[in-house]
Length: 323
Image (cartoon, rainbow, N blue to C red; front, side, top):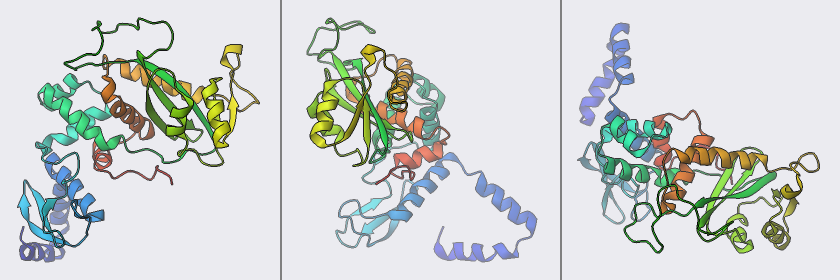
């Protein structure tokens, strides 16, 4: 709508009777899914929008395209919209985005989500991983106080790959070697007593001191106390970095030491994670970080709506993340 026409309509609001104003409010509260999506996108950009090419905030309106306001940067002269530079660039069918986020909130499989939303299964697959690109970045920056850390392992999966560097196996197969080996992928979970969680795919085989330095060194508060099992890698890491450490010797039947230190919270998280992953019937290792971020988002925001998840996917994280 043109600016002068909007101003005229806005001026007439005070002249309406209460029935007319209620009818207007009702119409505004029942916007179509596509209109709601556009509203969320434009509101997010209005809050902290900058040119995605040069980072300057000096730009002006430059027409519309695909129902989104376009802008031209006064600095680099390039044009863009609120989705430029996001995982949603050039993504169509905005009227189906909220339904797909509802499918993510409900942890539907790719085929089930495609059926519910009305998409082809390959589109459902692409949307899942584009929508999760920034969702997995919604995490705390530091863990404080008593922090539990432990690793869990999944069989390495090349699901969907056309070339394998090993012999193919049947779905649901098992490793050919006993114990931990390079056939298994290590997932390191660190979780403080406030429930703030970080997860890392450290690579194949058992976790090492070097990997702990890579992933945990900069996310533990200087006053944090790390609680782990008896794995020597944690002891060596904490000794080198000067981090307070308590080890629970599970092999000797210990579950809690000194009345307060255990790794039961992180082990319970492992259990919930693996049970949740099971209904996807196998997750390719290269997509594992997306699934870890997806699960973490569900744990952090169990009552999130589709609209809230869209905001997270656009980079508008709640104030959970700490510095």
